[in-house]
Image 1 (cartoon, rainbow, N blue to C red):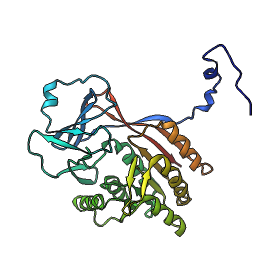
Image 2: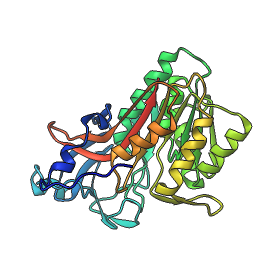
Image 3: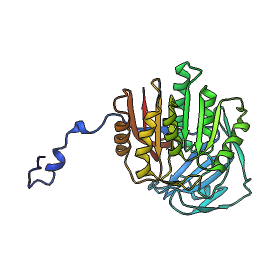
Image 4: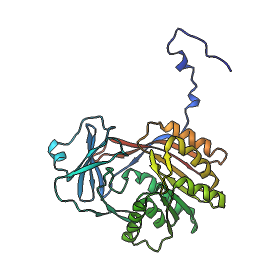
Length: 316
């Protein structure tokens, strides 16, 4: 083990780092709005969005710049979320006009219910559009009728529906019975009841470990883990402690014909470099490529990107 020699130059240690240590494939994935969603403005620690016919204001600590739209536009929003600044923390909505319990939204073949939840979410993560399109293209390009996708921490099932419509057989896993019920309602709303989707309410880590023991494999995997969570039987999830062993088990169920594994992580104090390193370690020896970076939404009017999460995805 060699020591780094002392130097009077405060930049000497930093300058000694090799540029080759910086991995290729670091990038920014940009999701644009569509008919039923738009990022209208952001700034001052908030974001103004349109979900279907309703506009909402939610906290967004990363929007450190100034707002562009007039204050009157923000004040006219139908609902404003107040409460916890943490994405995983509860709060409440203040509405300026009647907002129904649910309303219909659509993306591609998926029709789903929007809803104001006490965890600030509305039933869909629009920034995931970049991943939905990317995965669906790979399912279609495979030309296979037996392409199997595993969606872990699947929430309300929008990704599962997009992938099923693209031709994949989807296994959707979430620890929340309420989320599974919401996802099944979305399947019926989309008219995709005939598509092969298994809805499983279970702890993600336990499910993957069991699939590995059984020798079951998948051609594509999507996982969107929370920072903290609990399984249906009280299992505890802590992303920094729980993600590495989950990925170790996940490698065992990636098929020889696998096309992709997509990881996103929200509300954690970590760099895309950390996710990239973990994915590189997990899928070392399998060939293919790893792309990592920030997932961002393009603000309406162009020019401004709002970062939402880090991502890392392996493909071949």
